Length: 264
Image (cartoon, rainbow, N blue to C red; front, side, top):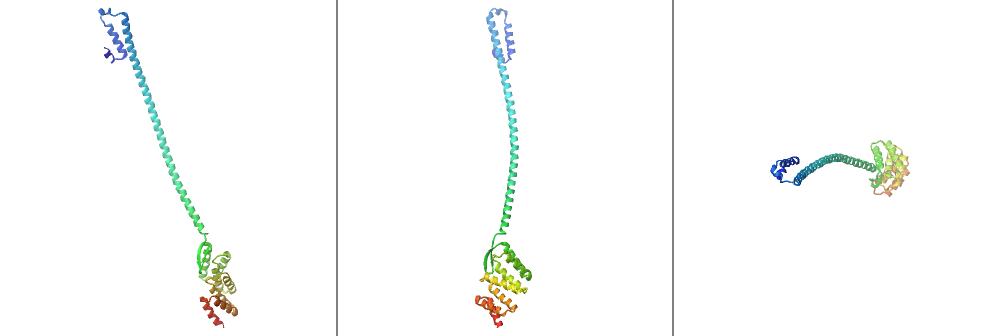
């Protein structure tokens, strides 16, 4: 009978036990004393209370588990929200990092372009090695450019403009390695414009500054030519004689000998 009672609710079990007690035949009622009846009732009540307490504990445990499950779901939802937020922030940071990398690359390119531009501008002022008329020297790019420009004017046949250009060059760059050659071409430009006295002055200045210059014999011969044009035969003869003694192996020396033979 107890084994069957485990399948009923506490109230149902209590009712069944009371019913069984009520159905006992009257012939057996005398066999039970009052104390035994009380013990039976107490035992039934204890069983009912135990079942009720067990059921109550089970219900509380179920509620606790339900609350824990609910709290766990909320925690999972909060965690998922935090994960989504972190992903969004990570994506944002990745985009910012990519932009920073692009900005850095652009900045490096600009710096490289600026540095290259500065180098190119500095090169315009760095001395360059020049070889002219057998002479080697260092010159600023501006000197080289101005000399070549003046020489181009001379070669175009504009001797007046060439004279002005070479004279300006000598004034602007008095210590330049181009000066001896500039004076030579300046003298030739002045000779071409019949400014013989100025030409003689520049040829003599060239010989004084650079007597070993490759064009020195030609300069000496040009001085004699100017003197001949000025009808100063005595001075021309002396210049030609000095030329032959100073530069005996130069082509100008052969021309000087021929001139001397005609002046006698």
